[in-house]
Length: 519
Image 1 (cartoon, rainbow, N blue to C red):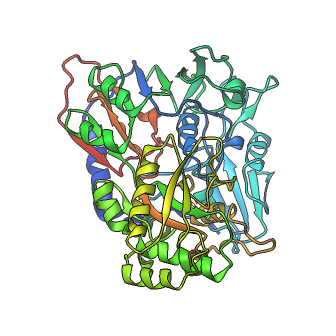
Image 2 (tube, one colour):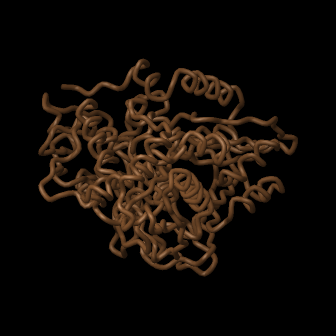
Image 3 (spheres, rainbow, N blue to C red):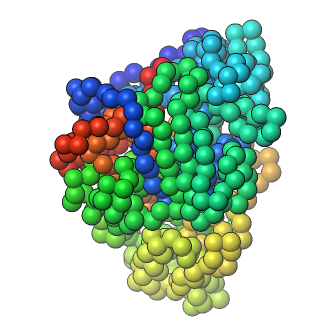
């Protein structure tokens, strides 16, 4: 059975009709100006280091987003998803699957070369994918190109392959990673070793600069830019100042700097909600009194006020683990505060349980100001129900995150970054660190069954979702055709720079829009 791309009804359901109209308008405006070749795009990011080896990325981590955005410059995927909800060919030109969606066939694009001039082969694709595919899924070479066999139906394989770490790359004899993408890593400054291997595996300095030059062998043609210079370890406030002073062209912002940027001539962008803030408990919560107390905490939190007031209407209340844009059914979960019911549950909880008469310590990343604000708000809301929570600041190494490392307290405020377009894959990654019993069935593929699975996981109360927050960035007015995806891909290969000194622009806010590279 031949795979078909999503149609207009599907993309309208996923991203909303207003977003689709904005994509069309933005795309039309971009085409109205004549693109210009040349120039160097200067990008500033908050992350202090980067890992360019997709096999070593940690699902759910904040660093994943930075790694992926820079890897987009070097590598390609088999397929891509554009902002109209349509799968586009990249290294694969055609794909098909059997009736059960267990066996997939991909026809590879002919004439594709890696940045070192060697030809892309099916064996290269298999070697890259096999290190990334989930358990029970195997890639092999075939007459047409590549075959992927899954033990269970894999109707979401295209969503999986078009997002996250599923890039195609090749290791050279010296351990360097080669790609087929539009750019090549040319140099690394600030004392870091000038090799891909060192960037991926070794310790990185607090600040460093990476320079990417054009890949002359790129199958998709030459990008408009001559090069991209990326500076790591730049705070959001400094990035904003550099943008205003003309020292940077694209900067990563935080929630507090977004408002300032919107008052300038800079173009501001916010993604779909991509980072989940949640409260994770250290124990498994099987004791009735622990489960009751966690339910009381959940009912005491005013998520809507947290998103509306504390986060200045730039976040969404999270009643489930998956946001609406990803699952399609998040609206079925309730996130309303019920203080009276929370007080009733508190009254039934023995004083010996942490959070009742005794303090329940919530560990917070001392380096994440937003996490501290959210944790303190949770403690204030819980206090209104008679619950006693106290935030404890932990160092970066002592903190537990969504990967399940140990926490210094009875609970921890964690962040989870959505990096896959497959809802099943995201749920499975979130669930795995929370002590999933051996032999437990995986996340169902069908939406109805997946909703029931997620609901049961919510009822365990081991992880309480609070709010989801978008990514933010700003660009100088001379940056043209910057149309990132709602799910956080920046697609810098499509950007070109207005060379005229008179180039100015009125305030323009881009929200959840963009289109991808041309096939």
